[in-house]
Image (cartoon, rainbow, N blue to C red):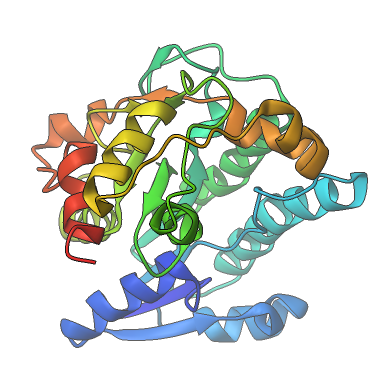
Length: 286
């Protein structure tokens, strides 16, 4: 099998690439250069059985007006280019997997794939436009899956990697009041979900890629402190985050309570359904 991946060198992409190569599947990285030319992008996609789109600028940053444009363009514009390139192929892939995020949902209320209305803030609207572009592949008769990611937990990238140093120093603590919901997924469960939808050809549409047991920021803090055998009582005040990140602090101060109803209905089994066992697996021996 030949799989083309944008964002192949990132945290999630590197884990997917390793899992595919174990199966002796060929991975074709779609780097930034590939998106500078429609013809080059089309050539890169030629012969691919599966196309996976992971690219997107980090959102845990200070949101200047220019950076908000980058957040949008790195998701919406790149997806538009990719789908247009797929449409120009004589022989199209069997499957297109695009990513999205749980920020598409309103904050701190239980949500699954049937939830409506969706969030109307900046990230919610970006995610809706992002998914709208990805869904154009259905007009091309390409099976399409959109994964709405929770916070992906792994020690070699993402949010957890950034949290480990302060927590190991005994400087970890809740963010804000700690009550915001934290929807997350272990990196190994994420990889398994990708393999699951690749191998089950009847599956399509939107899937929440989150553990079936969301926690809170306080629950995450407690579980990580326990896994590392470190105290975790140094809170990060809301005003400090606002000073550092401005509007971007919303990513850490708001939370989405998201449930993976459709994945569970298909029979997918999470190996790490609870935050305590996920963190013990990831950092418990460190």
